[in-house]
Amino acid sequence: MAGIFKAYDIRGIYGENLDEEIARSVGLAFPAVLDASVLKSNRRVIVSRDMRSHSTPLAEALIDGLTTAGLDVVDIGLATTPMNYFAIGHLEAAGGIQVTASHNPAQYNGLKMSLHGARPVSGDHGIPLLEKKVSAGDFDRAARRGVRSESSVFDAYGKNVLSHLEPPRATGDLKVAIDAANGMGSIYTPLLDKLGIDIIPLYFELDGTFPNHEANPLKYDNLRDLAATITNHGADFGISFDGDADRAAFVDETGTPVGSDLITGLIAGELLRQTPGKHVLYDLRSSHSVPEYIQECGGIPVRERVGHSFMKATLRKKDGIFGGELAGHYYFRANYMADCALLAVVEILNLLRRREVPFSDVVAPLERYAKSQEINFMVEDKQAKIAEIERRYGDGELDYLDGITVEYPDWWFNVRPSNTEPYLRLVLEAASEEALAEKRRELEGLLGTPV
Image 1 (cartoon, rainbow, N blue to C red):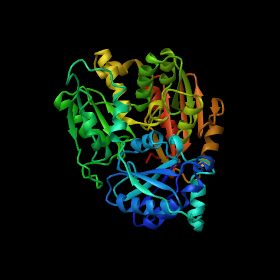
Image 2: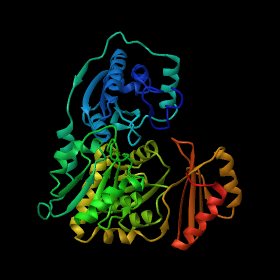
Image 3: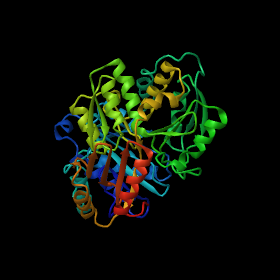
Image 4: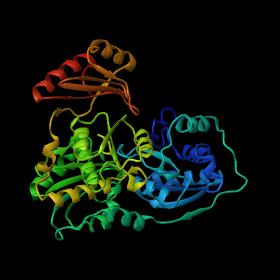
């Protein structure tokens, strides 16, 4: 069980440090993190799962624990994580759990947990409390066993997403390659068929062994087949979903991946066109072009630290319209302030149909600077290394929202400890490619060899 309780969820290797006993224990402990005032009148929780073979036994054990703890379970079956979030809000549940390991390889599994209104389980009263109770076997047995029922939210979820689609010029007006990576995006087929696009599908067979490539669109290697399909078929762009379909990456008509921070800016522009003056969140790894573009589109940019719990909480606090992260998470007011990759697809379609120019031309106005991907370094003493950076770059403008960010007039960088892996992560941006390369070499000399 060691190490499976992460900053945002529970994740481990099935049969090694995550099994049915742990899933059942999490179910027994789950009432402790739910809002007590909500539980007084509503003890329903949503449970769903992804396509991994071990997700079914884990979900069954989890449901046994939840009902033993006196919670009523609404089992929505095979579902994407955004569908789980939607179900929590739509069915007005006290919380929910998705059984998934997202983009991790086949041997992994996990639990993504939410409170009422799809709020994240976070803070001292969240995952650390769950870990403490599961480790100690500290469970309150309910006098009344909860009831399990089954339901489907697919139609309601689809109706909500498709309500944001602007009418296409004509059926098949755009040719789009879509890589489901053998993951949960595959179940969106009936909804994708209603988008009015000519779809070139890749790897739509549900298979939790991921026989074609990892279901992680952040790695460019996993986008190669999609890029080749785009160029070979003359597609207008491509979409790659991750394993539980809460993230999406986009590739333009030339086969070039588009940074998810730039996608955040583009979607923000679409939403602000309809409702100007709203707050839009972006994570601090994003290009400086993103807040600039949000302001140009009449919005109020809000810089936030990395992580869905922070993004969702701030989006709710600001009553924002939208937020996005470099990792490809897109948060919508229309999905209870939670991730919804399919809504991101809809908004990109709306934008391309309205502009009627190639995707690369739409992106070009945001490509104002030279920027790196996120670069990982294995560092034994993370805090000591951050302190060294602070001393070395003390003449810059420093802030500590997440790790350390250093700003200079013509370049900036952020170094932050990963919340889920033993890494320091670096992103940097400069006025030119030459300057970017120079500063990257400089920082690698301090941080070591990228992994």
